View 1 (cartoon, helix red, strand yellow):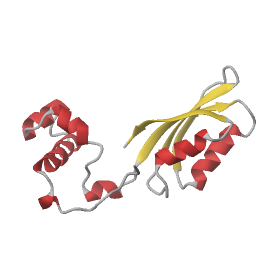
View 2 (cartoon, rainbow, N blue to C red):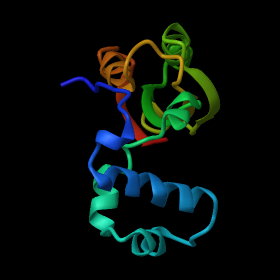
View 3 (tube, one colour):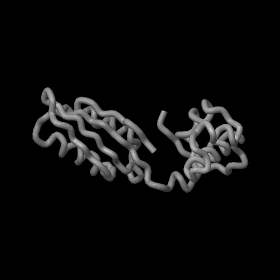
Length: 145
C-alpha cells in the first residue's frame, strides 16, 4: 500500500500521537539528552515512541525539506554514475552529497544524500525503478528524515 498523508486536527487523535510529538520536540530543542529521558518525561514507553516516530509529524515538520541517504552499487562502466544522477534529476531529487568508492570487481558503491521534498514519487518507487536498470546492481535506502 502506498503511503498516504492526512491533515487532521490533533484534538481528534489518540493522546499518544501528541506525546510522540512532545518527545520529538524535547529532543530537537535539547531539553532532554536522549530518547529514554524524553519518553520518561512524557510518560510513554520507548517501544511506542519507536513504533510511531517516523510516521507522526507536525504540519510544519512536513513542510521542511526531507532527506534520504542512499547506497547504490553500479557497474564500473562509462556513464553508469551519470545515469544514476540523471534519474535523480528527472525525479526532482536534489543531490546534497555524493561519494563514490573505488571500483572493486567491476562495481563501485555510490553513497548519496538527496533532498526528496520536491519528488513527485515516493523514494521507494525511485529505488524500484533504479533496480530495473542493468547498470545498477543494488540500491537501498540507508536512512531518511
